[in-house]
Image 1: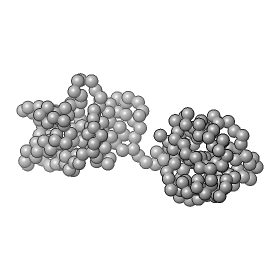
Image 2: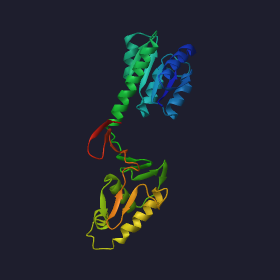
Image 3: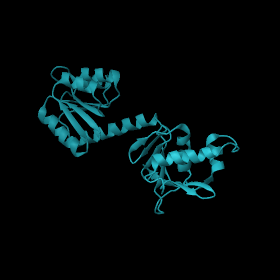
Image 4: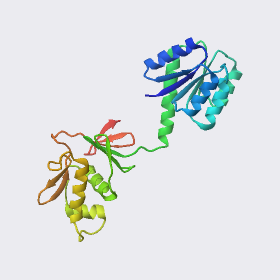
Length: 256
């Protein structure tokens, strides 16, 4: 839930803003003093700030200036001062918007949503998302090389992670031990392929509820191993990279 700080000395206005924002699903905190508001804005993490200009202690201009020195949090200024010079000063200090009183609470909420969406787009555009594989209760973060089973993180060695990731990316495909040895250990399969069996055993101990009846990595006797897509036949495999969700068989099934 997105968190918003309102710094406003008129309690009735602050409570009205809070009510409308909470109805839209935001978590809202209020400070009626500029000095206390500045301290919270600097020390705590908020998704957006709404600042009145005329505040006891520290005015909205100074709060905006101090916050903008170290944070890119969206800032909306609210004031009864309608002169262009005040708007220019506020925007020049780094505010993202300037609303004059009286104003429509619904318009304020719309502006809040617009600025937060814009900020999320800007932040997201510079940070590629992790590549995630999720199959039932198993979650594999290929980018961070982390694995969770039913929400609990498990520790994997380098080769254990590589082997699990490779199988999970190729569900329902049967691989021989020789193929896995060549793929993961990056060498001709003339070495000791028993290491594949050992690693499969260790992986099962970490991800399977019952290693005698594995729900993920299945042994195909006389052939090799297969990562089972589902237990009941219906596909619930999904791989995420960026904002796309891609089915195993290459068909896009929409945005996350």
